[in-house]
Amino acid sequence: MPKNKEPPLPDHRDCRTLTGLTLEHMPRDGSLGRVRRFRKGATVWRADDRADSIFFLRRGQVAVMKDDADGHEVIVRLIEASEPFGELCYCAAQESVRQTSARAIVESEAVEIKLGDFMGHLQENRDALTALIFTFCVRLADAEHRIEVLAHRGAEERLGRLLLQLAGSRGKASAEGKSEVALPVSHEELAQMAAMSRPHVTITMGGFRRRGFVRYGRGRPLVVDVPALKSFLHGEQIQDSKKGRK
Image (cartoon, rainbow, N blue to C red; front, side, top):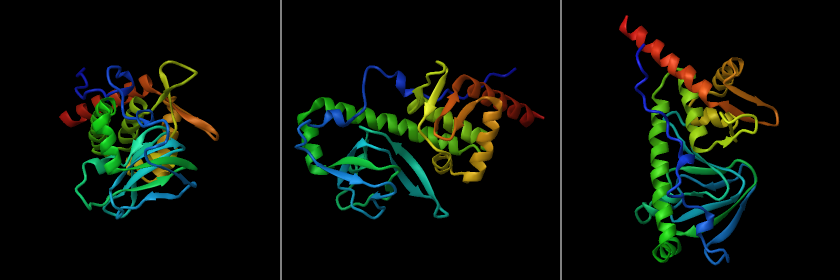
């Protein structure tokens, strides 16, 4: 039986030497930036807004999105409390625009820091600068693996690998078992991240649930049995490779 030669998706929760940039790296006295509050569904920025500030989420959840070729919104990243977003302003040319949009998934609160003030803080705080570099590295790796996910045409393969990527980068250990990971994500958000229709995601997730790879329900988080899902995807890849040799 041939071995699966695809490398496993990285689990950034295992990184211990470095930590990503968070709100904790900013002054605690509130002297840097201003607090902004967003109701559920409110726009944080639009695609044609100037890229001249970085945000740190204090509470809630924000989705950073980009339109695909057909004009459908695809979620680039889900932002959780304490995380930075809009960090690409640091790489943007003067007078450039966002080219993405950001929206509050739930009622949220964030700190907005102008680029010049943020750069001044980085010059005086080496730990924050190191954390920013680490954040860029992690997000670049996540972006490359998202491309790998989207390269798969099969619904089970694409959605399954997306779940494993999210479990490795954003999941939290489930109380029910060490091999299970809870994800704060809805079917609608999965559809937008996988560039699939909501009904297609619902059907595929229903199949995963019947096989015991996931658990979910109204008012309960999505729980992924990581080893079981990995084993299933590994088997699917082996079967596909055998079919290709016939």
